[in-house]
Image (tube, rainbow, N blue to C red):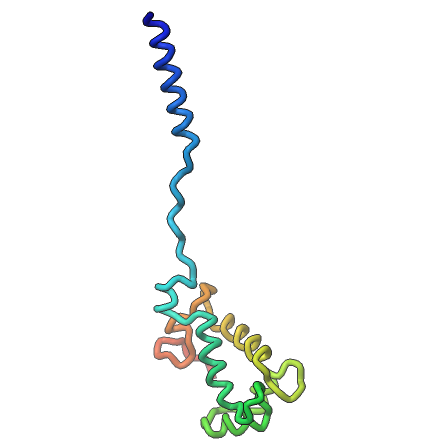
Length: 141
């Protein structure tokens, strides 16, 4: 009589152990990414960087045709009292050399600029990585 009971208990324990081993493990804690809310608050993501720059750039589009000509760019840079030659900066952005900078060319230009500024490649521009910030490294003249 004891043998069948002992056999049933051992079999029950083995079954319970097998069931416990086949349960799904708890999900791993979520890892933070450069686009997490904390990173977005403390720095500037590519999306925010492009949105800010595009908004400013498109103010130069005085005829509202969705693209900026060299004449519009020169007038805009003159009104801003920007340093440097507007024709040179325009030529860097006008990659297809059609005489206009559209949103596609602007986005490509800004993505390259963002990548160059993002020194630690974390996908976020911290305050010290942004040009003109008081803690940003000074470029040699």
